[in-house]
Length: 200
Image 1 (cartoon, helix red, strand yellow):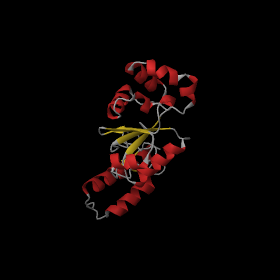
Image 2 (tube, one colour):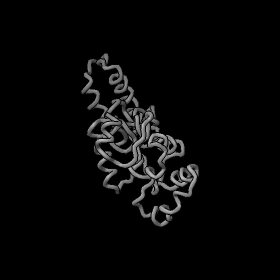
Image 3 (cartoon, one colour):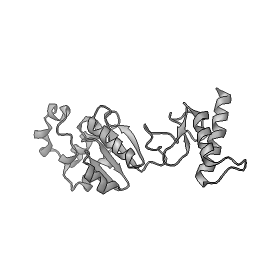
Image 4 (cartoon, one colour):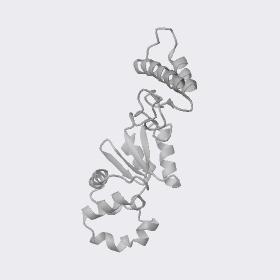
């Protein structure tokens, strides 16, 4: 395993150097050949980011590669280092799957986070609230079970903005999904026309 790690790191460095500057290696290997070499040599421990073309490690902090912090978020949409947007989504949500498929089809670099396990941060929610015209209800998943069980329809009008943000940041099921944030933009739910206007 140690020899493989050294080989993987060497291939990754070579691929990164060539792909980053767009030139051929001194040995004469063209860019495409280096890509294929890296893909075959690093699989299944790593692959190439579809956007920045760096060799990336799909497991956080795996020491096989020289830059373990550079990894695929969860799909061929890009790695954490080049992702412009963060999408909070739930894997069993059809709307989330449609949104992620749309992002990949339109080559929008992003990383994906599980909204139930890692809800948006208070700072991200406050930014979305400001962009939404300070309508806190737009950030809530009003059709969700948690929203109904917690009686949020009645409670929400009585909550302060701070308390509402706190509840959202502590319970991802309450957040309208998918929730996209980054680069001064925020989107709740998926409406293709809105996403096209905001992201393309």
